[in-house]
Length: 391
Image (tube, rainbow, N blue to C red; front, side):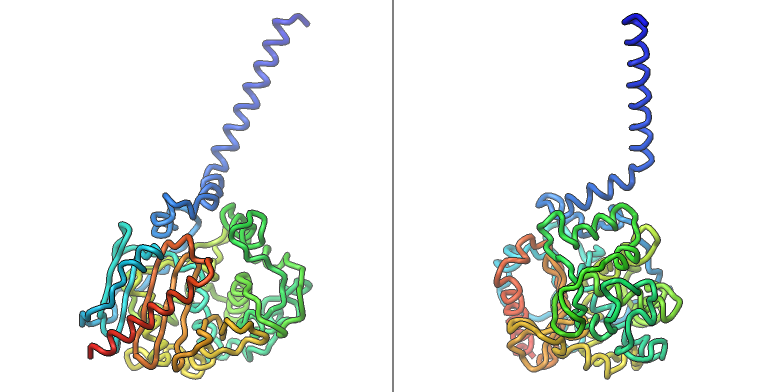
């Protein structure tokens, strides 16, 4: 074969390879887009916009609420302490303050608006905890001391085999899971890539086999524990989390706008951090808990569950952490205060003593720095004290 023919056939082969690569790129375009989104979610130039537009980046499912007026948050503006330096330092995007159920302050920053559906991150865990209490009260789950495998049998043989629902609620599953957001190869980032590429979160969870200790011995924050709670609820009820969440909690709560969940490729809700709501609607959950689970004359979440969830009950806690059933407590307790908390500065803070609820959304890339959480709690207390004194 002469050189001209070799060149001709080589050119054809290269063209064929190029066509195959182009075809795969088109076929996998959405997956590639989501994977790139995962790798740039927290870039300084993109984080604020990304946190308001997760529906453009990942699989998601809307939580369609029935038509009707949202529940009232009567306005009663009050003077706030100077928060300007804190807002800038912590990259705050939305702040809502309720006092006695009235809206006393609301502000938005960094180009965000009151209509933005902001990503919850781990604040979503506290929503799922509320749903667990509702399902337990309904009798679909017999006891939180039941093994998780009773309701999620696909976990048999996994690292969760032998753990109870209580263990998982307390983040005391004993499962080995690296939660380092800054390590590309950590378990939490591997999970993120599963989500982005349309994999199955159930399969990812069932594939975990490592344990660092027996369940129920000591607290260790493991985000995938919350997915296990979702598996348990789905297995016990035969229903999806979005359907249950709308019917049992969000529709009766009277949200302003249809939220949505980020999902995996199978349509399973990313319950450990994928709920997206308006900031005022995050505050509504806080007000519900401040009112011991009661809303407009209806007991949405059992009062006993609210009480059990929001006191520190996890075993083997370090001195600087208080943790209940997917809710946090400061260690220097101020008469029962507690909060939901998500990475990058998401909070629902509840102060029963002051009758104050604070919902915060942020894009705080310094959220993990030592002292940041304490700084935020100090500011919440300062706000609560000032609006209480203004009465």
